[in-house]
Length: 386
Image (tube, rainbow, N blue to C red; front, side, top):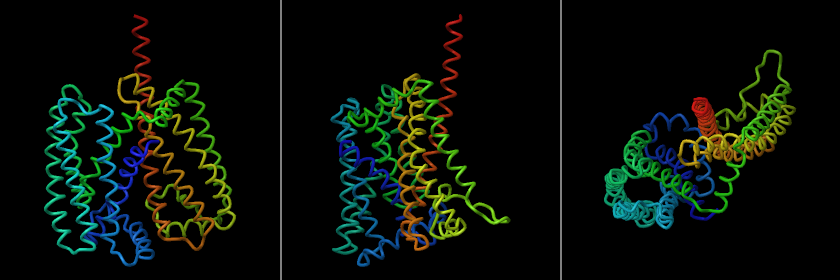
C-alpha cells in the first residue's frame, strides 16, 4: 500500500486513540461521561508515558502525537486532487479548505511543539489565534463545498454538508479541540482516499471480494468462520471451574478492560484454563479472516447492485485488524501472567472496544446487504415472470 494511504489511515486511527486521552488530560474530573468511563484505560496509557518519558508532561507529549493526523489529511487531499476526485466546480473552495487546514496544522505545531520549549505564550497564540479560528472557517468552507457539488455529486455533497454537524457534535461529546473537530474530517478524507485509490494492494483486495461474491463462496467462508467460533466455544467449556463458580466473560468481550479485569479473568481460569485460552486465541487468529471476506464480499456485491461504492466492503477488515492486534496482546498477557503490564492491558482493552465496534458494523452491513440482495432478487424474479 502506498505510504500516503497508510498515513491517512494511521492518522484517523491515531485521532480516535488520542481524542479521549487529551479530553481526559484537559478536563480531569470534569471529563465527559464517555471519557470518564474509560479512565482506567487512559490512566494505564498515561503510566506508559510517565515511566518512559518522565521529562515531558501528559498534555504536551500526547498533544505532539497529533501532528500526523493533520499530515494524513493534507497529503490525502493532495492525493485526491492528483487522482482527479476533486469536483471542478468546487476546486477553489477545496483550495481554501486545504489552506486553512494547513494553517490549523501550523497552529497545532506552535501550541504543542514550540510552546513546550519556548513558553506558554506560543500555546495561546497557536491554538487560540491560529488553530481554533481556522477550524471555525473550515466549518463554513465545508458547507460551501457541499452546496456547490450536491447537484452533480449528491453523496459527496451531502457528506460535506453533514461534516460541520459531525465536527460540532464530536466536540460537544469529547469537550476538546482540535482532536474532536478534526476527527470527522480525517475519517472522511481516509474513506474518500480508500474509495478513489488506484493502489495495487487495495485494488487487489477489492478484486478478491468480487471473486468471492458467489453464493457458494460466501457460504463456505461464513461456515469456516463459524466453525472456528464453535471450536473456541468447545474449548472454553473445558476450562475447569468450581461447582458453584461461573465461567467469567472472556477478555475478548470486555471493551475497555483494565488490568484488574484481566487479573480477575485469568486468575479464575487457573493454569489449565490459561493453557486452553492460548489455543482459543490461536484459533481466534484464523477466525476473522474468512468472516471478513464473507461479509466484505456480500456487502461489495450489494453495493455494486445498487450503484454505490464497493469500498463499504472493506469495513470487516477493521474487525480483522483489531481482532489480530487484540489476540497478540492477549497472548502476551497470558505468558506474562501474573506480572501484567498496566499500559498494555489498557491498550488491549481499547483494541477490544474497536474490534467490537467494527464487528457490530460488519454484522449490521451484512444483514442489510443480505436483505437488500433478497429484495432485489425477488424484484428481478417478478419482473422476469411478468
